[in-house]
Picture 1 (cartoon, rainbow, N blue to C red):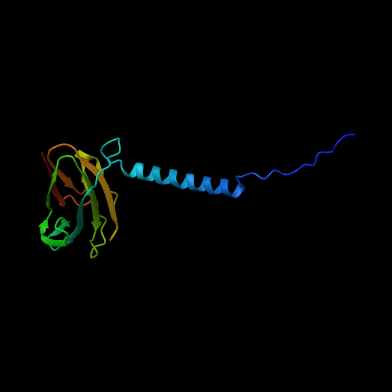
Picture 2 (picture 1 turned 90 degrees about the horizontal axis):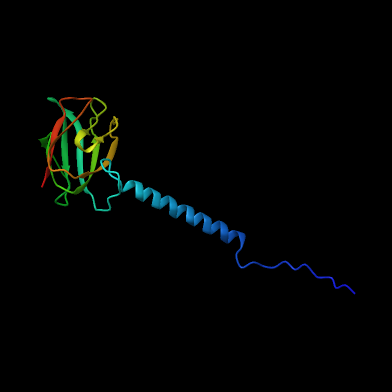
Length: 163
């Protein structure tokens, strides 16, 4: 006599829902790692720099005399904007990771603004009114470098990387 075997459905300890959940978590973690890795690569080097960046805020605007850059300092923990710091000279120690925040605050003429530092491959896009862009770069070579605007050639300043 042939015994019939019953096809019992074996219950797996890993359900389909659990597999989907794990796959979603892995995808989110991989995306986060990819974002952090790419965000850690400054524009002037080809490898990640995992350091706390020094924030420098540059406001692009104008007055009766013409267009100019103004620096907004947060080094003392307080925000202080001074219109006397026109086309400011910025001093940074060598080896500093800099997060340069450029903000177009020219509300009167609604002119586009930009900022360029050729020595560190820093080039913002053309910023509309109240548009901002942050560019990270590594101040890896000592010296004095100029920054300037292509749109408004009278806008300029100096960046000094101190040894």
